[in-house]
Amino acid sequence: MCFITFFFLFMFSMINLVFFIYFLMNDLVVMMEWEIISFNSMSIIMSILLDWMSLLFMMFVSLISSVVVYYSKSYMSSEKNLIRFILLVVMFVLSMMMLIISPNLISILLGWDGLGLVSYCLVIYYQNFKSFNAGMLTALSNRIGDVFILMSIAWFMNYGSWNYIFYLNFMKNDFSMIMISLMIILAAMTKSAQIPFSSWLPAAMAAPTPVSALVHSSTLVTAGVYLLIRFNDLMLNTVFFKILLVFSGLTMFMAGITANYEFDLKKIIALSTLSQLGLMMSILSMGFPKLAFFHLLTHAMFKALLFMCAGVIIHMMMDIQDIRFMGGLSNYVPLTSLCLNISNLSLCGIPFLSGFYSKDMILEMVSMSNLNIMIYFLYYFSTGLTMFYTIRLLFYTMINDFNLISIFNLYDEDYTMLKSMFILLFMSLVSGSLLSWMIFFKPYMIYLPINMKLMVIYVSLIGGLMGFMISNMKIFSFNKFIFFFKLSNFLSLMWFMPNLSTYGLNIYFLNFSKNLLKNMDMGWSEYYSGQGFFNIIKNYSVFYQFYHMNNFKIYLFSFIIWLMMILLLLLLI
Image (cartoon, rainbow, N blue to C red):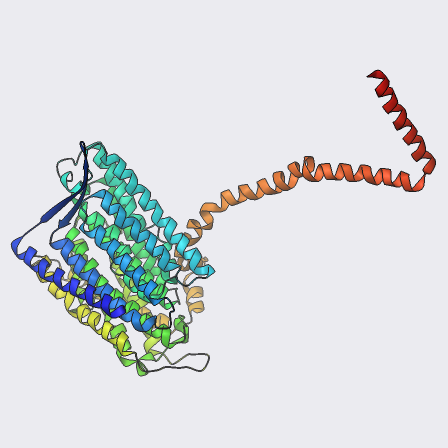
């Protein structure tokens, strides 16, 4: 089953690649419409839009998903219901394809909701309390985005068709279009986990690692970015995009800081995904959709590889995910360590790896733009933080001494996993340069002063140095040294966002229901109904019982009075 799925997805990826090159060379866009049903004047039409962007994205998604399925053959080998798992992954990929090729909001909703539903099923795959909670948080956060998509579908009723491609250019200043753009931005923010909807992304790490590799590289989290790239013409120079720029910059900053406090291997990688999503969203809201798309694709490759390496390490460490118990892994699993290090360096933007081409161009375009110092600071500081947590991770896992507390079982790597990882390793090395030639028709030449040009190198070096220092320093002493205002708690808990988006939202309702239960159900209503009647009858019966047992004369006297009252009543009647 795994091999057949891998083969079909891989061949589909290659077909998409051929079509992408053909479409790009000839500057083609194909719009297909299939009329499903026509009844009187009403027709239900399924429309498909194929251009170089959708074909390239589909090629990347199918390539990563094929590799993930092949990897799952080994990773999930002890799973009883492996076929169910593979089918869920395939459903997930099909939902993403639906979203990519749709120019129609209704079919986008099908793909969008499909992603949300299947991601819930995958997050709760290992059924325990933690994964149920994470799945619920993921599903409910994504439902907010679904509601905004539904509302924008309702607003599109004003135009008579849901094919948004037709309206993007010539309806820009219409009030309905302004409302739709706001809703689409909010929907994209929930799916791509921007502040204040960030807490579900690290929680979704409860899913099996192959799912994390697929979901958090190229599918679920990038759906929001892709939607905004498609709607980009509509939103350029709107105030909503400026607000999104601030929020996405803060997301990038927050995720970078929190990753430096985290000790869970998968959560560190998840937070780095969050940081890169902030980068994509912010450059997109500055008006560079192609750059955002370019970074989306290069990021998909090395992030999927990063998760796969994490999966191998977690398997090997007997399900320990805490990086404090790792160390010296490069001596035991050299090939996995090679893949992990290259994907990590690509994430940092080390020259001539795939991440360098997109990140460097993004940061230089930021330097060229006329935005304020705050945005500039957020971009460059977040880049430094990326280097910071990456070097810290490398030191904890690869370079420091071996730290396991119990007997260890480090074996040589699994060849099935390695083959799939090497495909992505090759792509992590070459995809950046290949895509920069394909996507950008004219070569960019960005002129900047020498210090601004070298700014990326400066912040990377400082970030790397800090990461090295922190990995050799006890985290407690670091906290005492810098954050004596209890700031460390705030920074390590994602700015209290998980607490605010779970307990913070429902505390009022839970408190109200607690008071209702205590004061009404268990209080006044008990006093006056159930328990109250019971107590009254019980007290009377105790009273009569007392007289009955103790004073026969009084009992007889009361019996006679009772008889006389009955006779009196009979006489009156």
